[in-house]
Image (cartoon, rainbow, N blue to C red; front, side):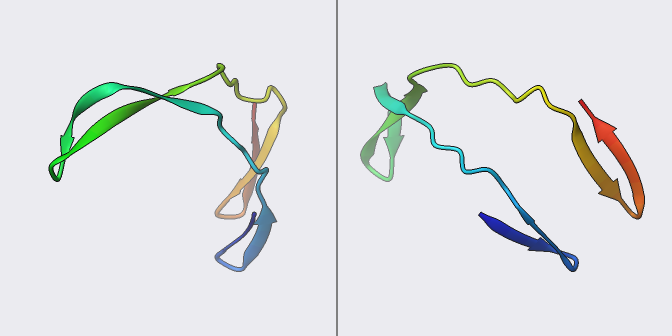
Length: 61
């Protein structure tokens, strides 16, 4: 996905989640509301992330 913020354009990785419908947890506008459960655990990538905030560059990992 291509994003644009304050004059900077950047790409984000496409993340697709596999979910299953769980049990009914309540009602919303008169219809049953089901919980969604992830099929597998997803973890954050362990690579260094480079950021810029108000012109200051820093990394977070």
